[in-house]
Image 1 (cartoon, one colour):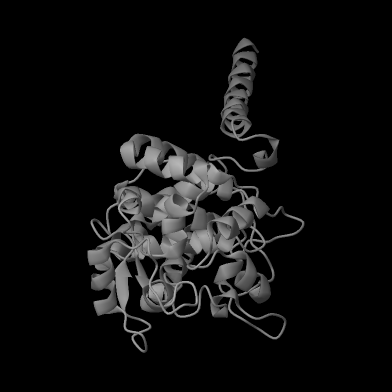
Image 2 (cartoon, helix red, strand yellow):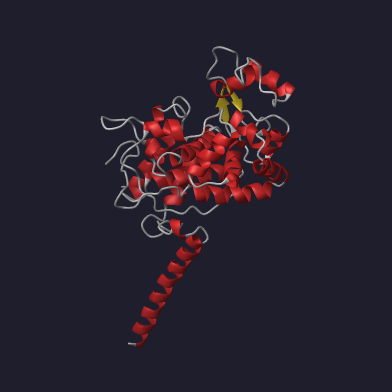
Length: 337
């Protein structure tokens, strides 16, 4: 009887420790994240992290640009009706796919990697891990494999049953956005200036198409002149890649020094007029003191950038997450169950 009592106490202590770990992981971020916590799959699919990382390592080894593409998928998902994997849905008779919206068409990539991860998870842990959580884990691991920071990903998101093509065209920040456009779009998602600047630092990896920065080279203000903030040699180099007409899919690194390494050189380039997109350079040159100072701070202190980037990724990853009543766990990330 005494041994039974001791056993019961140990069981209670075990579950109390789990509850405390859950509370610690959510209280830092406030009550709005209380339904998500890093240990969500601890018992139902303990292999989830390992499966995601193994597929991702192979994918990035084959194509180093895949890390940036997968990070971008999470961004573009969260900015449209929340982090609900709506970007992964193919279109059907009820809705048009967000994949076909202007910010994603011909540029959003990595869907096959998500499919492979989902298939392996369904084999090991059927109907358990949501596509939205896969996107969040993949974004973290893509950054980590590129040399960036680690952060615990709160989990437990559900997948949406609908996509929103129109909102994808409106809510995702465009490459030619002004600084006020960016601040407003981020504020609409509950994100502040420090989130805007640190998350923009995700452009330390990846490439952009000529069509995304042509305006800066030839007609920035509707006067057939280039953007005056562009550093001269950088400007001529971009002109050789991106002509006035044609070559829309020609690409240039977002971070010319280290396009596959996650570091703070992106911010150093902004200080020197070498931000590729208008939405990059205006963080420093857009006459908003707060963002200008943040760019300087992150250029000087990589650790500070990493710390804020991790915090902002958690914050962004919790935008309008769905519960059991409003969402589901898709068996196939491309279609509703």
